[in-house]
Picture 1: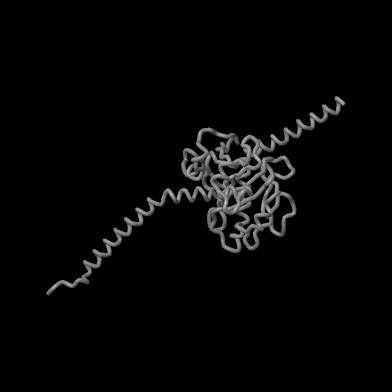
Picture 2: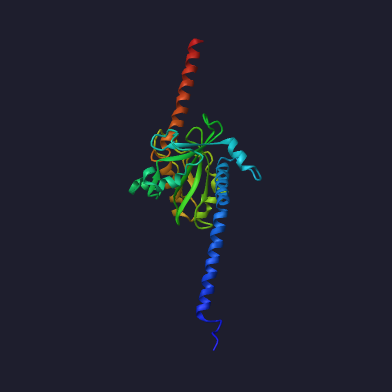
Length: 273
């Protein structure tokens, strides 16, 4: 009696062969498209930097606008000084944070952003003249309600005044924590102060319920207390001496020194008259 073509052995053989063929096709496509995916990711990163700097326009040549107006620099987070140890065009702070040789462990009260580890060096993006930038674009990240939130904060050249904020990656609940993408909420950040009037190394900026009442407060997200707390903690961490605090201090001190020199010059002119 002839063996049935529908035998279990034949079915399994065909299924196995089909799986092998499909896996080869998928793997080949993934390899072939990897460079394009990386290019799109890089383009998206540059777009978000232009957005938070308020330089993005629909239909613009992103690569050209970025190259003409943005200068990346690698900063030593411990000293706040620029470093030539890494190439700012290729250095990846996220990957560095995973490498024990390029990062440090965070725990307890020192890890209010929920990162576990952080890199020793990070890339900042300068808008305009890199020797006297109009804006400083800082990468920020921290835990929200459902996962890690990643974004950029734009600070004016005085090292204290916020120009804008944007989040390009998060998993917050739409209509609640997801309102971090709402243009109306993000518009509140413009002109807010990181450190306030007091000369303190610790940032004062935070999200508050019931309406902001000072230059260091922003309205919390309605119905999203945990996401709001996550944003506050994220900024408290990255703008403190543990993050970009030492770097920002150099701009704040430079501005104060200019004010003092200007006042001294004015005083000398008055005496001379």
